[in-house]
Image (cartoon, rainbow, N blue to C red; front, top):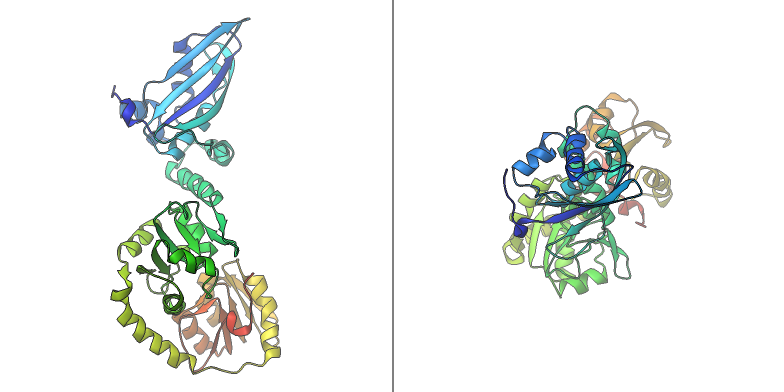
Length: 392
């Protein structure tokens, strides 16, 4: 059996147990190994994990009185926190030790490398209960759900503007600035806790102040709006590095691998400036081609925007703004071509090239989205801000 030294431990899992008769230490350890077998798949099987040195020697401290046995089970691990929490949730399902009925309750997971931490995996049993009842368990999927739930709970509000941010903003020397709350949540989900969102295209004063105290990476969407934010930010705040999502993609939808690739490809402000200046000039020319939309018409769009935001979907309307279709954002370009009489498209997302091409072919008059990353001489393309929508 592989040995694991104390210096290799990351966490210690501690659980209290109670058996309704006199039981011995081998009975307790046997129950731990035997009744968790198969619950979490081969990857987290306790016997296999111990053979591979991922968990250490299981210690049991017990005492017997009045015909009962009580005590504590201690399991040191070199696994990550989520995997350790899953093991804790699994051993709580043990209902017998030897010949006796028994109960086990995990008291906490101690981080031996830093200090005792709050038992953040308390909800692991609830999150995983339905999945554990299945014959086959996808461990990777379970861990991802647990990480996502825990990371999203770490979201804080920063500054008087109550900006969405990660918990390590004040403690980190380097800070990643993104565009909005959804971007922050995605970064937290993938383990980036030194991140803060601006909640719009106007640069908040708290972010400007922060930019003069920290090493700043400005991480924006791969669209026209991202370029505009870079240009705006460099006029008011301090930037050390600039990173962009792949073309046409948003930070909120990137995988961890894509985020890492984008951050590894970041450039200094000096390296970015020539391209930024060129893009800035191009944006200015595009903005000169504005279309005057009657205020009354803009007001009619606002209820549709309010209802679609947060759904990752789209409304298709007729000329009277009656909804003729509600479809997922990813299916907008094909839906426009298959539904007759579409006059207006209102999106919870970016107005990109494929959507614009379909709108032109179908004779659509207006396409409205969170941002516009395309152009058209046939269709009127508007952002939420263009029609007077105010972010809450």
